[in-house]
Image (tube, rainbow, N blue to C red; front, side):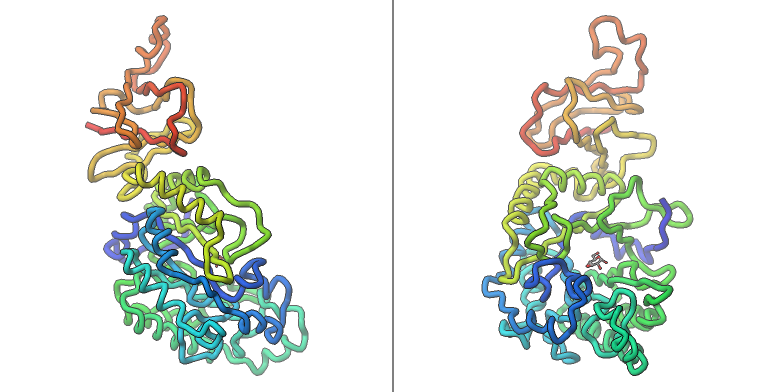
Length: 432
Ligand code: GLC
């Protein structure tokens, strides 16, 4: 699978590929509608009507320390929060619009509190900023806009001036990258060039990018600014790639899959397709096995709390990570030539030279590893309890002379009949 993006400096992303797991936070006025963060567009709600959410934004239970503790407990090492989503509402005390958290009944800078709380728990800080803005008066109506089918609003495009909007974005990014200390990631979303769309010419992406690099040279920038060659990481969304992602020269790129617990990014009361803890762990492992990170999203409620289902899953992932995170942090794809057994994923830590065999579906008695000769393995154990896992050349794994029919470079790991009580059991292989 080939994608466009390259990482300017490997140094910038070193911490990122080590840490592997982060929390995405989508929070804005749409949490009150509780039916998708695109509700304004989906239901074609005029701005005057959408204002009811602005007038009622008062998250009395908002406690960012609690969010940060849950993220840390799940094993997440960084987070990215929507400072501004497509609706245009700003979570911080910006000087450039009145459409901000400090002007709601809640009245306080949300972003500042979140950044402080997460930093205190030791997580790195990421800011998401929407290039789209369905509130700003100069943002022209296009195919994604809530007013896309309204001829009068379309007509007003003649007076709207995108360069003014582009300057507004630069002013805002200046605030974000000046007033909140070191920001580790800036996550722009998103470009849709072409007919009735918007891209680099509308955003003035080059200027924006130069400004970012000037303000915070160490910052990682995503790949959604529609600038060829710009992007420290690639951002597959709700999509698990089948193999490591490659650049034009077939070299692996740094990538981060972003995923929701259910089908929406913002809090969605009636969305019921919640992924199980087990599936989420498998997604994390699957990504790392292909050299990718996972940015797992929460959509806090209008009262400022996490949905009980999100808590439950974060805690479940945390239990797994407490015992198994050695197969995640600092890990990436297996050395060349090693293909994971069916229903399994390998991750590998090149520093410790340990290979991690994750068992997604519990097999009967043996796991056979094609291409891995038993001579290459010094020792094997379950990661969750450090209990030894015995292994032999496959030819010796059956007693009735079957061996002569079997290949030599296959290791047979003997596992118990009953699956150990962990969502995804991991066998840690110390390689020679
Ligand atoms: C999409 C959606 C958006 C969400 C984002 C996360 O681009 O527009 O609602 O914030 O994906 O990747």
